[in-house]
Length: 212
Image (cartoon, rainbow, N blue to C red):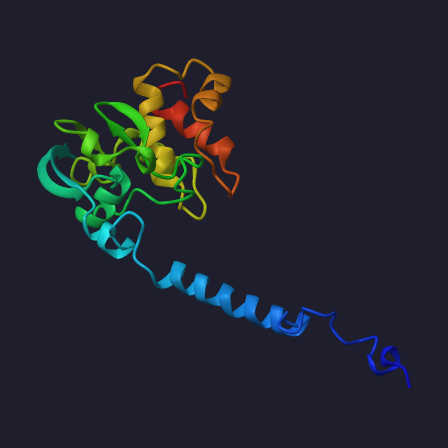
C-alpha cells in the first residue's frame, strides 16, 4: 500500500497539528467573550464612580418662594420640578401629574400671575417667586369666580384635569384673552380634557369673565 493511501483526506495538513478545530475555536471565543462582558459589567466605572454613588452626590439647592401666600424655604435636588415640590414637599396635591411632559396642562399653576406647566418648571429657578395653586384660589368658604362657574356650568366630569383647567381659566381671564369663544378655546388649548367637556369649560370661563 502506498504512503499516500495511509493519509486520510480529513487529516489536518502537515505542520498544522496544533491548529484548533472549529469546535475548539468557537468554545474558546465564547469563553473569552464572557470574560470581557463580565469585566464590563462588574468592573469599576470609567468615570471613577458607580451609578449609585453618582446619584447620592446629586447637587441640591435651597430655594425660598411664596405659595398661596405662605413663605416656604426648602432644600431640593436641582432636578426637582415645581410640580414635585408642590406635591411631595409641600403636600399640595391639587395640581395633578398627567403626562409629565407639558402636553396636557393638568399641572397648570400661576407663577407671578402667569400660567406655567409646573411639571416643566425647575423649582430652583423660582427663588422669590409667588406661586398660586388650586388650593389658593378660594377665600375661606367662598369659591373663586372661575371655580364657581365650573360648578354652575357642570364643566367637569372625572375631574382629573379640572384643577389645571381652572388655573388656566384664571390665567386666561387675567391675560385678557376672553373676547370671544374662539379666543378662549385658542388660549385654553394647552389643557386637555379626555372626558370632552370643552363646551362647558368655555362657558364657565365666559361666565367668570363676565361675558354670560
